[in-house]
Amino acid sequence: MGRKKSGLELYLHIPFCIKKCDYCDFLSGPSTRTGQESYIYALLREIKAVSAVEKRSVDTVFIGGGTPSVPECDVMEKLLQGLQENFHFSPNAEITIEANPGTLTSEKLALYRKYGINRISIGLQSPKDEELEVLGRIHNYRQFLESYQMAREAGFSNINVDMMFAIPGQSYEGWIENLRTVAELGPEHISAYSLIVEEGTPFSKRELELPDEDTEYRMYEDVAKVLGEYDYHQYEISNYAKENRECRHNEGYWQRKDYLGLGLGAASLIGNERFTNTRDMQEYLENSGVPERIRKDREVLTEKDEMAEFMFLGLRMTEGVSKAEFQEYFGNAVEKIYGEVLEKYKRQGMLAEKENRIFLTRAGIHVSNVVMADFLL
Ligand code: SF4
Image 1: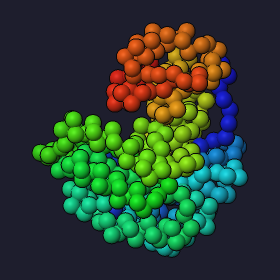
Image 2: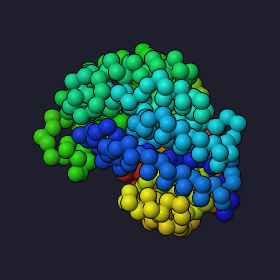
Image 3: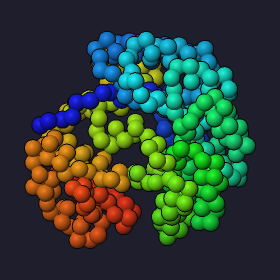
């Protein structure tokens, strides 16, 4: 099997937030300065240990969370220095940091730029203060605009804005208005996810006035059209970019490039092996210098697993999967392995084929979970 060997992607998890949003089930929470310092030192120990054996150059870095813009400059500088000293970066590496309004300052932005961070992803969710309040966000729209402006002034020419639809109380018209408000600002990239009510979150215990299924369908369906008017193109189920501004880090994930997740609960794919770091903070702090001790849920993928992942991750992208690449990786034609499933969904109008690529149609995108599940062997 000829798996593509290329550079490496890095993900760094910063599990701190000022306060938990009411819908959030990510691995994150409030912290003290001492807690942040201990964590960053532990992360540096992991970086040192891992970089001693991993010598490939790094193509993309994603510093995610949580809210990576929470730690103060002096704490964050230690981490960014450590990254720079221990890894070798490709000349045009994409380095992204996630940030939330209400935590960004011009000093922090200048620091990120100094260490080569060239993309920032700002969590907005909604430009309406009453919706931000419903979500339990810590910021208002004015604070977002200030952060956005500061990021531009600091020299960020590649900005993503995260948005959310199907928020309790939101109408179809209200959502389209939100999209237009943000698109008019002109960020290079917009991610638009629907609210998922996750078990164990405050939302799961509340009576929520959610948009009905038909409204949610239209809310999703019209994102591509509305953003198209502002020169964004959809390149993945929930992601829209201006020309050549797709997130390379995420594309690498969907294309199953090797990526190494560092930090609490971070997931990795190296070769045909997947593993996830411990989610237990104490365990992480004590053992991060010996990565073998913190890596859990190790799974060596079989060829069938890899084929299934190739298909269901690849189909997330609007350009779909390349039949030639499938053949090259697995030494078999995709039709030989998935002939029946492909035929079934083509007949139903959920999948289509063009220029040797297989992709989801508009109808297929709406039921992508069902279609993708059928590729498990
Ligand atoms: S800012 Fe993001 S990670 Fe933090 S609590 Fe809110 S949704 Fe979760």
